[in-house]
Amino acid sequence: MSKFGTTFTPKVYIASSEDGFDTKKEVVEFVDTILKNEISIDVGPHSKYPVDSVTYASMVAELVLEDKRHCGILISENANDMAIMANRFRGIRAVIVTNDMAAKYSKEVLDSNIFCLNFTTDIKLIEKWLLTKYIPNEKHIRTNYLMDSLRPVNCL
Image 1 (cartoon, rainbow, N blue to C red):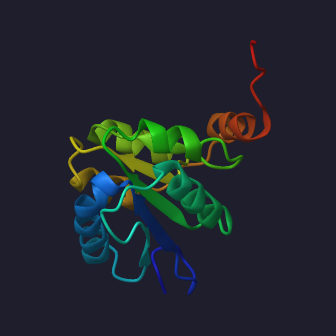
Image 2: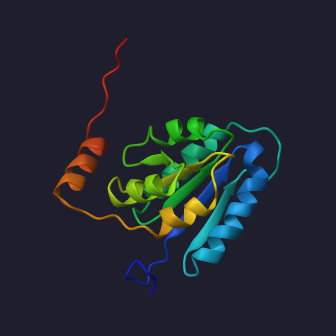
């Protein structure tokens, strides 16, 4: 039985830009050491050849949406490009985490499901984020419902 309370094995989908290729390998190893029963899946890229990182952000977002118990980690130089792309998918709450408090808050309150890592972020924050559980209360549920259901209006 996993820490999620069932025999279901959650997956952690991990992708990067080509610049984040080496960091991604390090993150996959790190995730595998802290999560014994979960499966980390390297979505790509599988070389340092230039890629469109937002394509990988989209792939991870779609995989995470297959089951809400899955989560993702995206790695790029500044993380903004991948976070913006992932957040275009309804039901995805991709966050750029820079400290312990943000890692904890983004999971406990916002129920974030994708962690976006830039090159200056300590990868140990991933552990805090992965092991923190969402705490549903009336306000958190309402906030997350609104984030998932409302679409912003273009101001053009």
